[in-house]
Structures are given as C-alpha cells and as structure tokens.
Image 1 (tube, rainbow, N blue to C red):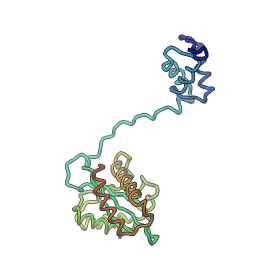
Image 2: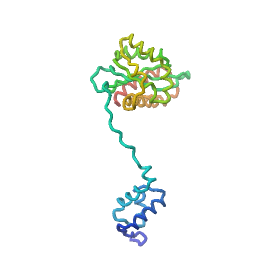
Image 3: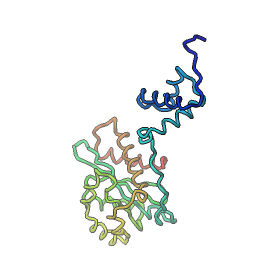
Image 4: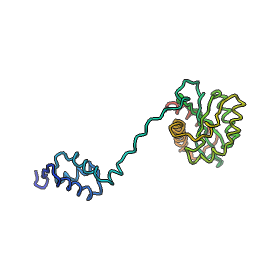
Length: 242
C-alpha cells in the first residue's frame, strides 16, 4: 500500500470530537455519510459513523434543519364515514378547475365522493353559479340516487376555488334539496371543517385534477364534449386507484 493512502487510527478522545467539528464546519455542515468519507481520506476513526453522528447532532443549525415535525395524534373519523350506508348516501362535494376550452371559456369538474367506501362521480359544469351546480346535482341524483347528507368545505381547502364556491347561493341549494326530499345540512354545507374531516375529498380532487391535466396535455385546447368523455374515462380509472 502506498504511504500516502495509509490512515492514522484515532481512538476515543476529545481531540477527535474537535477534529470532527472542524471538518464539519470546513465542509459546509456536510451530512454524516459525506463527512465520514471526507474524514476517512486522512484518518480512520474507530466507530466513525456513530461518533460523527453524535457530534453533528450537537450543532443547533443542523438540528434545526434535520428536525422532524411532531406526529399528530390520530383523530377519530366522523360517524357518517364509519357507519354502513348505501352508495353515495353520504357524499362530499369539491371542485376541480378551471379548465380552458377551445372557445376560451372555462369549465369545472364537480367531484362527488362517497365518504364511506371510496368511489367518485364526476360532473362537468361551465359555470360556478348556483343554477349550474343544481343542474349537476340533479344529474348526480338521477344517476346515483338521492344522498342523505352532503358535505362541502366551501372551497377553503383550495385557495383558487374558495372565492368561486362562495358565490354559490347555498340557501337556495338547501331549499332545492329539501324539495327533492334530500337532506343537505346547512352546517355541513357551509362549515369550515378540519383537514382530517375532508381529506378524502381533497385527495380525490387532487388525483382527478392531475389526471385531467395529464390526459389532455397532448391537446392544449379541448372542447366540452371531449372533456365529458375524459371525465367518464377518468371515473373508471380513478376507481382503480382508490
């Protein structure tokens, strides 16, 4: 072995800790694996990884950047999500969009999520007005049946859609549901729920929005009919992901 490649054996001593600190600062607070390789180019420390890890953890700056957030305690699910129910009897509503059509108009995808068993239903709307939402809701009832309760976070989970969903006249929507013998609780419709209450709807909304954008990425401008076709195909694909 060439003399320049020989290592000096360093035993457990305070000088070794000072050496590790000096190399750690000299190499811009390198991590444990990188610092181990750098030091071993000149010295061979007994139990190097353990010693280097203990020294690096003492640096406040490194500890601050490598700190992990505290684990949140699991929250109990809502009673409507753990009880047995018919398909779409307990439904959550969210919006995906806007999507730009060929004629430069905008379209949105209304996402209906079954809160008990994970399945979705997609409806296309060309406006976020109350009338368009009621029409989409009527199409949903005609295809899936009348839900007992509908949850909506009122758009507060997505900044881009929060102002749009606030334009919907929820009092009129509730009146329509009562006339249709469906129960749409006012608090469930306009309340600001915690993230663990509606994470299923938000996750499905992100999944559908990503697939809509990816499936139409080859065609930057698409019309309303092709978007309806994409929604029907994505409904089937989404059920395989869930």
